[in-house]
Image (cartoon, rainbow, N blue to C red; front, side, top):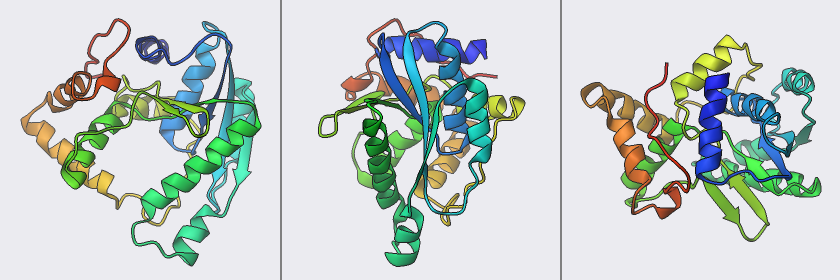
Length: 244
């Protein structure tokens, strides 16, 4: 826990993610990434002066979030479950052939609306080190452009700021921590789970890493230099190494 909190604090400082008195919500999907982020930020409250809530957008796919409600209660974090019919709309009514993009937009819209109703203007998302590398490669391979989500994104139209405090933590570290702490991970009932373009890229990175062990580190380092100026750290930065 202390090791992960240290990595998150370094990321927060490098990109000026959290300020004194901030009101922050964690978008809790029920997956391991957002649950690990929630636990780390809950622990960081003892070092920083900020308010924390957890919000889940229920997609209407019959998933049980009662374990997350209990988890938030133990962390002393207010929890809100927002019921929607996003899943049925996308899969049953619209029958989207490429549902991920539409789903992401609708979930993000519902999440932004929910936090603004609570006078919260910062949302913490559970993207980690591997997510960043994979997103960069997805943009390059599928779209022919050099791009990735940003560590801090200011959504001018809504007044919401997105932060990603786990960018210095590797996926395998997140997995190990979630398992060790027995976090209440919710089974994903999305019909296209594990059959997306991201899964194809994840497999590609895994295969290439056997021949080029430092592949992810080199890509992540390149992202923090031009041509992605938003990724240049503003604080002291030491490139994240592979974590146990």
